[in-house]
Image (tube, rainbow, N blue to C red; front, side, top):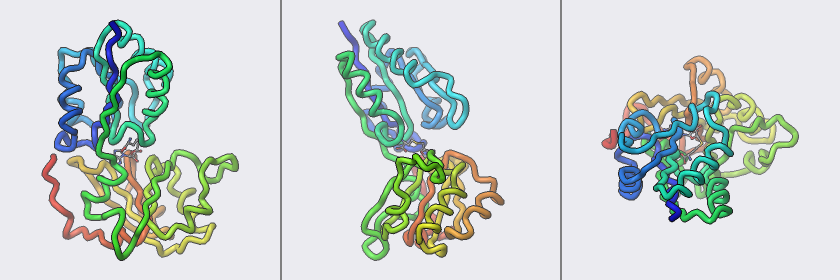
Length: 251
Ligand code: SAH
């Protein structure tokens, strides 16, 4: 009998934002393949009766290649085991969850997807920055900052992003922040557009750095900003007030 694989989102880090379904399938799993992105607080709650497989160090050298992760999931499921693939935030937003679903389908492995609270929306909102707002932003665009915008073969259309009136949310963008800010300004976005960089959102050591497209690169460098961080570009950032950050009860 073939087992089953659950592709599970952990939410952005606090156990309070793990869904009830995620908790249930994690607690019943025989095998859990996890990344570091869910964070220490959630990883500390993984059940010790399960086989726990660390698939990678966040932002560092991957301990397992993507195809090795997929092969492991498939092999364990074919042994009849219940497998959880645990990923930070939502499993299908920039986490290669889509590729894992394809691999499982190809091998006809039963699969369930457990959505997670994405950092793209939750991290800014928990510091008091709504990604949309009737007055300031009627759309939100979520972009991977992993690709250097200076590369000619980029799959991203910075021309269009620079023209957007709504909010831009950039994940995995810390390393390329200078190139991203330059790409937007070169393509006509106002250098005075407010920007916030939120590191380790909804975790005990969360930190917010604010500036504009013109100043954020220096500010981030001075602050020693490091991943994981969510970058928000747009007028909604003006709603951030360091003296009135909403309380966070999920920690
Ligand atoms: N699937 C995840 C995103 C994976 S890409 C989700 O839906 O949230 C990894 C990126 O997510 C990081 O580089 C960072 O930009 C962002 N990220 C995830 N959790 C975060 C957190 N707690 N604080 C800040 N950024 C976070």
